[in-house]
Length: 204
Image (cartoon, rainbow, N blue to C red; front, side, top):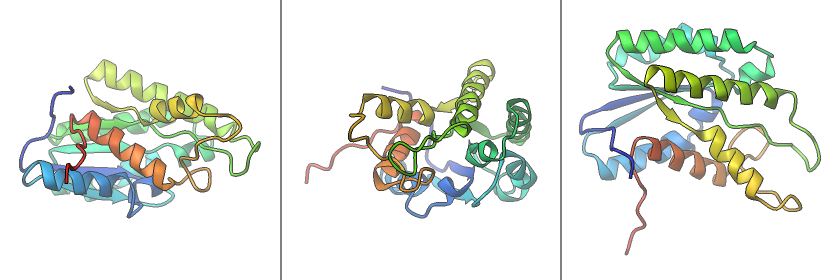
């Protein structure tokens, strides 16, 4: 079992884009589970639709650090990939947020961006997915090198896609980008598991 990384009274600020701001998404699931399992833990949704890593850097202080968080989670990359942001530029923006959060005394968790899915059967989601995969690799390396918590959403989603039936693929998004109910649940479980929190079935 993963070591529990949260304690009563912690505040977790989740910075991200439209996948984060989704009112039914992974942040909401985390809020609901943690409210029942760890007293006083607060999970703050700081997602904004359409935002890139550069946008998150611009509002890091206002939307995250000003709230004196115990943790800052970063989940971004889909919009960067759609705009063709080079990996080096993406990494520099993420590093700036890591440095800023740590200087403010917050721990950092990096959430790897989920891959895009085809909008229709047979419609490829490349070349943006090639960038998404490289962004995920960049975050994995940063987490390993700098002792950051990794939330491996990209790897988990890839595993589900690869294990599925090609003739009847599992859909984790409803439009190729934004989460379906299944995708929301899977992303929420992955987020919680990274913090050492399991979702136990209710015996009642």
